[in-house]
Length: 436
Image 1 (cartoon, rainbow, N blue to C red):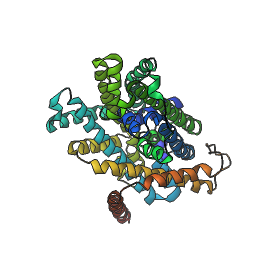
Image 2: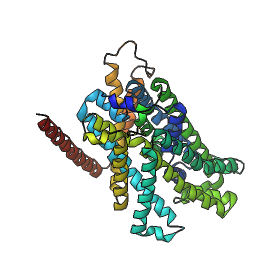
Image 3: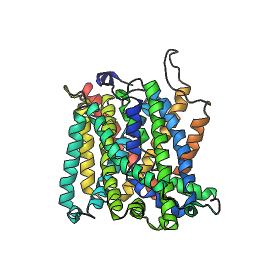
Image 4: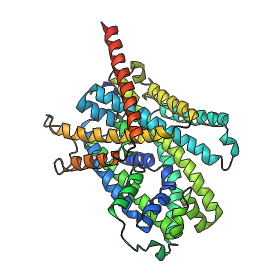
């Protein structure tokens, strides 16, 4: 990996900052809907799916933690896979991450945010109003992040606090208003039921890995990365479990019927209509915070690709004053804006999730590949205990999840792979011709 430009980046992010950004990037708008979706399948035994997902994502994140301490260049999963399988694999991974996953997911979230806001202000249902709103939001995120990673990280901390406070209040108030009979489990759910619920929930746990895109700006990565990642996973799991407990304990069987806004319904039960308003507002803030955190993290992906000659070099330029990859930030934010105003890409959202699972698989395979590569004896990095047990288990879990993908989406992603592979070779040929 070429880390020359990473040396110019300032390393300000520690384990605590990484954990906070991991929690922020993981806890998004989904948590305001998932309690009902889980209740439909498992009822009061919904917590089992959360525990299962915690174990599953833990396996994958162990692989991310090891690779994050071995390969400290900016780019996260892209950097790990590129170091193991070469530039083509790295380019495909980079594109899948920053465009196939992050850009489309953030654009979808922005549309969801305006949909929620239209419940209060119908004018937000108008396309031109959405366009102006998207431009203002992405303009703010772009400005803040170009001013430097410290500025962006501070904003993430503030927005995460704002987002989580109402959820914590819901948990605290709800704990004292639980109905024990609502939590009674009459029969243990089947493995298939737990698996079906876990498949839905797995995507609610995705996002932690995005924080590692700032690896080139993390201080003492060998220690900060594994600590930060698992502090983040642990925090997310505890928050999710408590929210499910409160929603189930307060709503009972009616939780499964409140599929549009189960937490808002729970808050209304606890404190009246004002509670529902606060929870909807929190969902809007949650989306705002998630997209803002993603601009901080995922904008480093095209930067890393350009630094390694996979994209035009101009994208790797660093701001002379703020020491931030400002061209990459502009490219990433601009792409989100364009996709957000286009709207209506429900199928692309599913493809984005598929893309992320393929990237997970690539990272796990990278761990196995690096285990057989020679490293200097003085290198200090985190190593997963238990040999290849964890990576092999992670591969099994990922393949199991991928087996549920519809054939139509598999074909669509294959076409996407073919197109970006063609771009890679054309760009490589053009660059080689220019240098001769």
